[in-house]
Length: 222
Image (cartoon, rainbow, N blue to C red):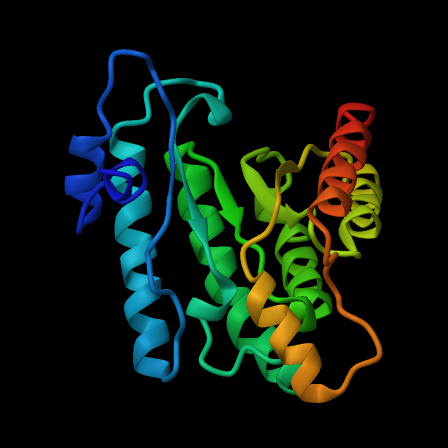
């Protein structure tokens, strides 16, 4: 019963059908189990995202992009070597893929959100996002979104970076502030590497404060 609240279907068509509601709820659809290990995996996810964007767009009726349901994409699903040590390769191969998906979402008039990844990929994620946002073909589109995790110690600096980029580009960027999704993995990875500190808060109250501070920042930069 709980799972059905979040997993709406095995295909995008099934999810769209099950997601119909009288209350006018909107969704940001994503694919479960995203993680490309091979180029074949990345191509399959790229095709699945493309198909989903077209299917969601076919049901998008509102003229305001954020009044329509949208899609969330994981950058690690679009490239099998999405790691900082492969920065040059990732920028050359992943940026064009995300740009194509963003253009499809723009044409369909639906939002596209880049989901949050683990902390060790943050700088790489921001490099990819900035490269796509600087594409002149997307200059007038306000449907691009970024997910930021409040349990991360880099939450506020990331929001400040987004605000600075939005100001420079003179456009609106959607931000979804969430608590966080990879806490256990972040802790274990830090322990394995013998790092002197964790990239995430270890007390819930700290995450709550970070979330409130992030929300205050966003509301003051509308």
